[in-house]
Length: 507
Image 1 (cartoon, rainbow, N blue to C red):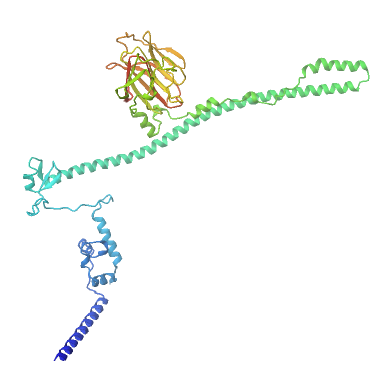
Image 2 (image 1 turned 60 degrees about the vertical axis):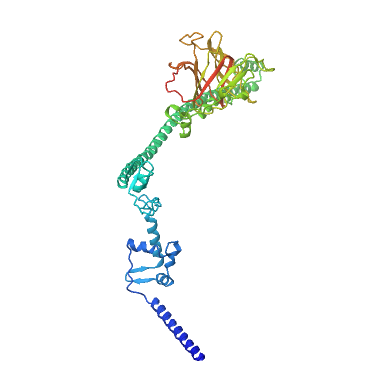
């Protein structure tokens, strides 16, 4: 009995195996036969369905993609006038995915997924029907009654409409800005072309002037050459005449005739004949000294009045000077720096440092000036002895003598309450059309430096009053300059980081 059951089981197993093999063969035959009833749709819905077909792109639902389906799609499907394979389908799917979050201007924007129900009340599945303008978020009616009770709340449709209007306004403004910028590009190109033509014309005018000067020098040179040639020709003629007379004298036999010929030679021709100077053929006396003109040519540049600076230089010249402070390392021992480097005071009780130059109690600013326009002010606080200006830093880092050398330019106030301008031991009395007593005198002085133009000016800058011109230096600054202060009595307070006033007088 057991043997029969075993045989029956074996027969059933063989039958099932044959059936499975037959089914597999039919399935393979069916897969190898093109399905002419397949309809390929290029609509948006079909492309969306295809997003779940390719698991190689990391799409959800890739686990539902069976090997049989993959074999069908990987084989070319041939239809009348249609030739579609898997690569083209993938490309179309990829393009569709990219286009879903791309706006009209071509900038790819990945749109976030949007939820429609309230995250705080998931169990109720409440719709996000309201918008809180205060918190800038959507919410349900329960949130509006609780967390957003006192906030500015409105329906999402109203809020979306307002946001769209704002976005439209912003878009129009941006479009207008782009249009104006595009027009400015054309204007910049045109103005640059005009500037090049103008510069070329000005340089050609300068070259024309130099060319005329060159032609004048050439005419003078030709005139000098002609004079030298005439002189040499005359000497050659005299030499020839004397040679002829000498030959006549040598042919004479009579002694009296010989002596007469020799006498005429000595009294006539020889007195006119001179030895040619060694430098007769040289024109070194007409050498040109163009060193000054060369320096002027090297300084040919755009003037500041027509804005002829690069953008960086122009912005550097316009922006206020970085606020500087007094540098304690450069201060004299008799000076004390106060108020975070904004004030300097003279200390009478401190003895004069040994080895120092008596009376030169100076201190410099901590930042150099290398380009641009700068302006700062100094409150003199009724001090009766001070000097204010700029200087170069010496080799040892110490400030130069205030106005007593070629490296400093200062305005001085001393007894009897009169201003003088000092530079390189030279003093110029500063005349002011107004006289002020010692108590009611100038309480604040403004200093304006234009490094590139070599200009340093001083003004009366009392608060609430019109600025009055005092004095101006004109120099060519070759090294970085530093603000310089000398105090012989009282104290000075500096005010830095100021913009250059537009109403500064020039005289």
